[in-house]
Image 1 (tube, helix red, strand yellow):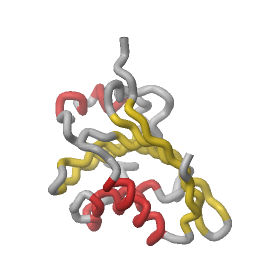
Image 2 (image 1 turned 90 degrees about the vertical axis):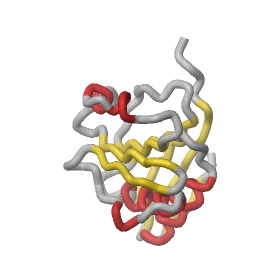
Image 3 (image 1 turned 90 degrees about the horizontal axis):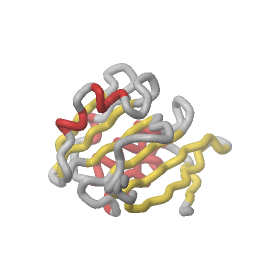
Length: 144
């Protein structure tokens, strides 16, 4: 499992840029971390890495879902803390999300309709004055 110490917000955004370059169209990132751990900061870097405007990226805590246009495709950034893993799908996200769209989900829980998609899992934890990032990537097998 790759990991890295992130000294500040700049390092966190840089990791987002780097991992965006390794994410195929239709990729999903499931982000875990306490409030203030850097999930939205990482997403700013991810959007930048896809050629989008990082200044548009905001926490989805109150809006639940943000959409960002990038030259490489749309990024759906959502917060499942209050909705649970299936809540966003009840709002019609499954009808709006195209095959090549990227999805970044904060507080994803254990389940979710990610079957058949490439998935990255990122954990951000406080460490000293910065944070520690660990991540894995894999193609999720389709449900049978």
